[in-house]
Image (tube, rainbow, N blue to C red; front, side, top):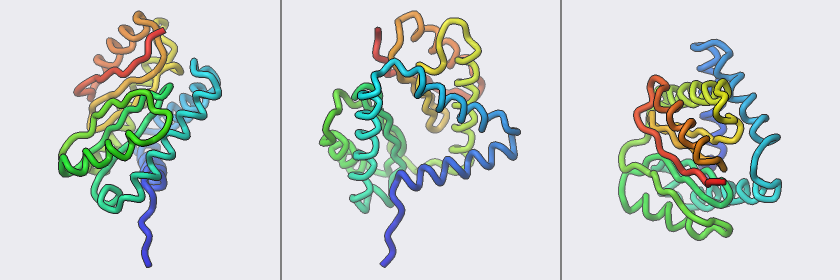
Length: 198
C-alpha cells in the first residue's frame, strides 16, 4: 500500500530542492540568507519560548490534520505559519470546497487566536514559481537585515506566487518601514501584513 508523504515532508523536500537549485543558479547568497535568518529569528524572537513552542505545535498539528484528508493532501498546496496564535494559511486549492475543508480543519486546532485565510483558488504553483518565491523571500530578508529602521529577525517573510506575507510582533513604525522596504523589492507583486503590534 502506497502512503503519500505528509505536507511537512513535501514542504521540506521542496525547500531542500529549491535551496539546492538556488545555490546553483544564484550562488550561495540565498542559501546563506535563509540559514542565517532562521537561526537569528529563534535567538531574538519577541515571543516567549513557550509561545514559540505553541506556534510550532499549531503548525505541526495543522499539517498533520490536513495530511489525514486525502483530497486535501493530494490536490492542494497549503502552507501554515503561526505567530502568537495568529495563523496565516496560504497556497492554492482547486475548489472553494477544498479551501473551506482546509480552513475548517485548521480552525479546530487548539491554541489558534485568529486565522488569516489567503488560500487562492487555482492550480498549484510550478517549481519555477516556488523557486522564484524563495529568491524573493531571501531578497526581502536581506533588505530587512540591512535596514536601520527594523530588526529583520523580528519579521517572518513568506512568499507565495510573488505575494509577500509579513508576520511578527512589531511597532507601528517598524511595520511601516517593513512594508515600504518589501514593496520596493523587485519581483514582489503584492504585500500582505499580519502583524501584531507592540
